[in-house]
Length: 503
Image (tube, rainbow, N blue to C red; front, side, top):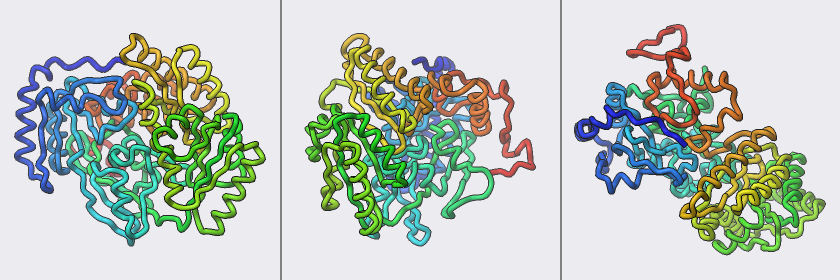
């Protein structure tokens, strides 16, 4: 994994840049009680040297923690005017190296922008700053029986701004969609410092789907400073069914049969035996240890509807030879079932010094092929793997176990993971479902996209960031200069093509 060579001139000017940033943060008014901060001492910077993909580390030149949109704008304008690279960062839970710092870049952390600005039940939405945690939004509206649907396993800490940047999903994304399906508007700061608003509280906007462009853009287009999310009324009834199978292929067949029957569960997750054992030891959720594969199927809606769907799911599972069936009798028991699945990553972390979490998506029917391929790769590389899946939409999260202290094991884990992702693409899938590309999958992009595809994607980046200052080294295996690609962009506040509406 190779990052761009640092700009020696920028590094030589680091003391001057830090001084300028301190002046900006002290001069620009703060919102709220927490003043903006500039971090530049070696010990404090180490807290920002990696994200959740901790295999790669790089100390940033300086970290700025603004606490207002105005401060974000002024910092970006300064970096733009001085040709300084910028790496945005949310809570640092990214699992693809998307927030990996650069030696010659300013890191902008959004942790201090952590307030809920407005709860609007009439329009069924919440306006929040990007540093608020995913779960905090649901907690804020729980008393009125509302919630925010996307629920990544890290929802207790991951930030809503980071969720937008990575287009995060979660265990309930099968029925309720990814982040892109649950945001209504954003406030967004361009590298030039210009603040724009896209969307709002209304359900849909005219013109181009710029929200769709920005969701999943991984910090390459701008910095999110406010998000308006859709909230939903909690279903009157939700129950979960545990289904155990003697073969993983049977569990995969059950997933396909449930969807094929026209049933769309609120969530449908799968774990293989190693993941079940690790999780049960950690959480004591009541999982059947003898099962080779476990499905968690949640059905929600009205009482008669849920009862009918549970009967249908149990009939399908029984017909496919399910060896274990158990339905939750209370919300507490249902939440216990999910607590196990959501703790799968830390549970595996208890039984191995390190693990490498992959993220690929395949057609559901191809699951047995991938599992067989991963078993062969496990023998080839001599590394164990535990599997957890968003089974309903074919999103895989293999956890490759290794020991970074053993020479060569990290490299083997990376090669193992790369072969899994190549196989995902080969069977008709994609490189990522929700973790993003970052640096982890950057050099695999050409297995999925032609150079023409990649050039077109880079032209979109050039519209927003013509000098490629935002999060360079991520997503694109080779980043062309915008002049080489041809571009449409706004310069000095004027559109080169006035007939094209400004956003």
